Length: 290
Image (cartoon, rainbow, N blue to C red):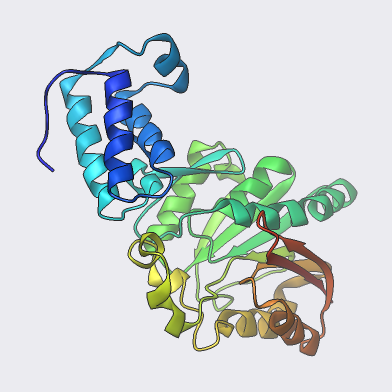
């Protein structure tokens, strides 16, 4: 795209950005245009209503034009912005973190009552978040359970730095630690809750994913092996060594994997205590206890 430095009002920018994305076939063009314009012009929805004729500075217009160009090539809007909201928390993204999505909030909802009970009864609770990425699951739980502590585990140094930075910005750094580990390989101690949103896409299905996911989410966070179940096998086999006797394992799953994952954990000595669906009604979260 060629940068257009012609002075433009906020209303003009919103309209032209929406039109440009819509013509490019971008889903949710109106929302993405609004998010981009608001972010790079430092304005809000209220400003669009109360001051639509406000002239946006040339440097902001150039930033908006550049961001629109990136969106048209398929880059997700939240990666362009550099952050995404999850469970009311603003989380920074990086190249090696999965973009947290609303469906994963179901996992947080599933664990919260149990963790609150443990914290009230024992004066605290310990959480481990496997494949933590941005730290989304762990940090959401910490924000809701003040007596909890959490360890975020990932193989990526980039992801661990991002999660740590998110914890610090949210004022949760004192209760959050990070550990580089291949699942449980470098982990010691026991936890009241083991949480994970592991890679669960079968390898052969990766190429059929939306380009926003296929080209911009890290492959390591998506590729679950030939049948999508590799990570679940590891967790089912090893979790017992790191789980308190009455602890729980909460997992996000692919929408066709409920029966297969349940069988894996039952064979390892667990019973399913809860199953939850996502916003679209698809199977999304399983919770197990020994």
